[in-house]
Length: 306
Image 1 (cartoon, one colour):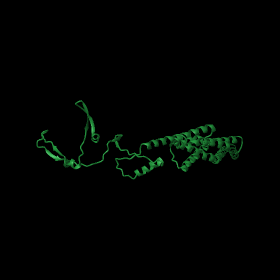
Image 2 (cartoon, helix red, strand yellow):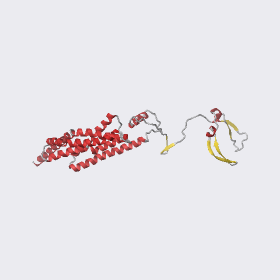
Image 3 (cartoon, one colour):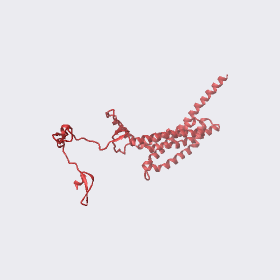
Image 4 (cartoon, rainbow, N blue to C red):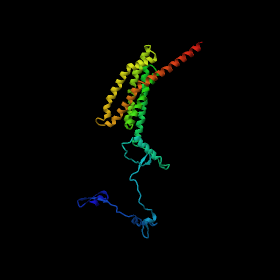
């Protein structure tokens, strides 16, 4: 049975009504026997082998045992060799790629060779570029909507200040929990672009209405903070409570959804708390700067008329 497994099948042969397998077997030859193999040099006269000279194979060739690949792969007409490995799931993927690139820099590679990290890393880089573009586009769309609704090009920046405040909370939550910032977490941060600004919209809209009613800036801000404190807290709290089941890991693929929920919850906590403090201060600062610009322009206009 062992002899039947050796060799390579080359077809079948039917003899006397029986079908037999044809196997090609190569005998095991040592290096010394291979070097002592006699070969005949053909005479100059053609096929006549009379008087042909016999030579040892070791005299005309160098024979050694070497390692060789069983297949040659090419990409863009260049030979490539791929090296794959399993990664440690306990470490962040970008940290592993960073350590691999760091080790590559220590290698002395000839000019005609190149070392590149491909495979899943290329897909991750492409996905990060797409998500970054989506984040920038979402911020621009939110700004356009706010500018059209408030009929101002300045106060939408006050509302957009909530986005970095929410991003800080999301990053801090992942740092405290010791979790990597993966694609789903980045998607959660993009969601914060539209969710976290709700509290600022409620607060800034109330301040603008108080100003229209004749209140000064400081009084309008304090009155809006008192009236809108409860709606802001309730709006954020309902969203946070609705996302809590995702963070606990119920059902299948829970580990995939949890980072997105954690990013949203962490961002909402910090954005809600800081919105009630930083946004009013930033609003008053912008209003004071704009009032000084108006006074400067009006003073310049009066001086030019005189």
